[in-house]
Image (cartoon, rainbow, N blue to C red; front, top):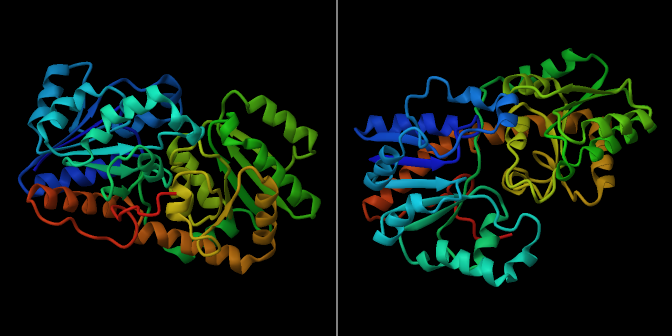
Length: 387
């Protein structure tokens, strides 16, 4: 199989799956290429996102060899396309009826009321709806993607659960839990990691911290990241009297961020619906954290079973997050059980190896003209709920 993945740029959320796909293709005598359509933004590079591209011989840069990249797209048996707005890369394939697996975050992150826009509907029809009976499939990078595309009448029963898949770290769950206690004996550790912008809601993490402080709980909260709200968030922490409990290490690369997660008992993921996926959910669960996640985040309804391997809350009701954190702070056995269940969810299902193998199997079956495999849950299971 000649397989090509086209996206804006490679990052640490895409590289693990790409490596797996490359190995699968080569093992069967085929080839794999990941085509970057644009250079990465400096802000992302400063966050360490560019480190994942090192020593990846299958990555191609469109701005260095556009004709060569377009030729790879034309000649591929199948193309995965997402994270790029330039439809011309795949227009010829769509018109010719060649297989395309679209990879998309939600269409209406700020509200489905935008669905009624005539101009928007014309664009969605041109790009998606008119190919609903063709060899075009949708990989949903978030639990609200299928519902958005159902509104525009696209892809029918060809909407599959997918997402982003950071590197999976194999660990012994018991040792992972013990390491958290050893990192801060007698103290509860929490972590939050994101750009500090409005729809990530760093203020919710501070409200959780204030609730813990009010109850006399000994804790430490690390708020990892930077951005336009960093100074305001620091001022809010000071105003709440949290200078000794809340720490701001700034931007950390993915490796360092994982270290914070592996020391944390609880991870707070507080974004709203504008967070199309939210890879911190995967990473925190892989790190054995008891997760409290905003249910508007695309990853959360896919990965989290409320009360079993994590908690979901309504980002518009930060009090819910505060009450859930208090429950976890008081119930060590629940905290531990959830952390282990979260780790097992990533180990057994939501990891790059499972995602790549299932995606390759589905693409291969489609190319052979057979029925696609049916998976009950996890990557490449059909998203029929359409939240």
